[in-house]
Length: 70
Image (cartoon, rainbow, N blue to C red; front, top):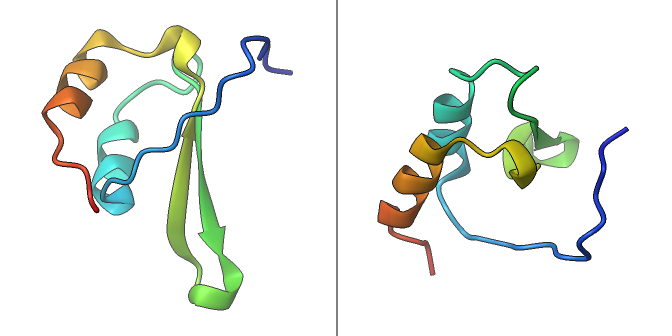
């Protein structure tokens, strides 16, 4: 069970497929994240959730450089 007690949920609009590829490189025991595939959309990935407590600084830097989708 994850410890989520800060009452924050942050949504960013980015290229989820690009970020899914980046996140695959991290050991899931050290960095918790999950993707969501939509069965009614040919099982395409439509969202990624990240538990930010253990968020690697290298990913934070990449995300700050990301051009957010509008």
